[in-house]
Length: 353
Image 1 (cartoon, helix red, strand yellow):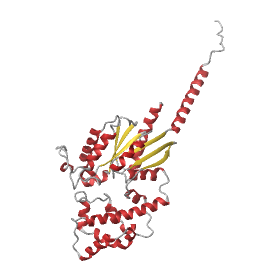
Image 2 (cartoon, helix red, strand yellow; image 1 turned 120 degrees about the vertical axis):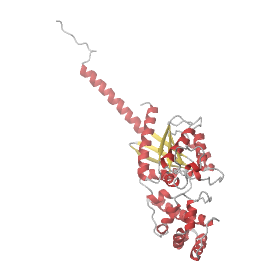
Image 3 (cartoon, helix red, strand yellow; image 1 turned 45 degrees about the vertical axis):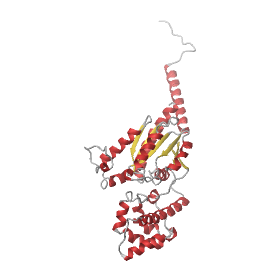
Image 4 (cartoon, one colour; image 1 turned 120 degrees about the horizontal axis):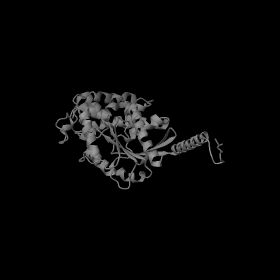
């Protein structure tokens, strides 16, 4: 048997394996570098009062250092204004009657009050909130065209605490603070070395023209739809149903020819309020096409119906729906984990790895 001579270009099996391993490591390092350089921009869209700003506050609370002292003080003022202003709007309704002398006096006192007087009229608000006609007006606020936040009952229940001179709102308070978003605001945070920018824009009609300036470099869009608004009208147009407005807007923005994000994410928000409302205002009383074999007071039947309506209006390529409750931190944490995985997978795939 002759001897086999190794030529200079020949390599042993161990050398081949070592080279492959080295290449694999280089590829992994390259991917890791690319991943750490990935920046994700999420644009929040939806009509007014759909919960966009509440979700942003949740992300600040969960993924950043919470709220600064200045923000806490700002929300304290907002909550006090929400509380007094909501009660005043109820009292201004012609359909609201109070009978007893003490409550009539309380009504006049509250109607004359300024925000700095909240501590002085705290007992009057507590007294009025015990009035049956006030509670009925709150329940029928949409029918009576009383434009107040859906969680105004929370303000009234906590008025004594809100009115305290050293009031420091909790995160749960701040999630419920209602402050109309104007302009464009951003929150930036990092998860696993990936930078997320969450862009929030006003949802009122007058604010939507500003949306065009937010479309550049958007990774994904999160559209928020308030599930409880099927019996409500717009603040800026009382002849327009909020649910129909939201559906039309969803169809319009997902059909923009120049706007193609990697994915569309639908938040069917305020699920907690829907579950309560359908027991008092069955969905089949508002929609002629609600399935006859379904129960308009059953939460799951109602949720499925509303989701199908949004699905039918979708004009994009990929839609990822989630049922959400923006004031629930645990719910938001779980939902955003799912959203994050969806968005990152799509972004990395688009980047080529």
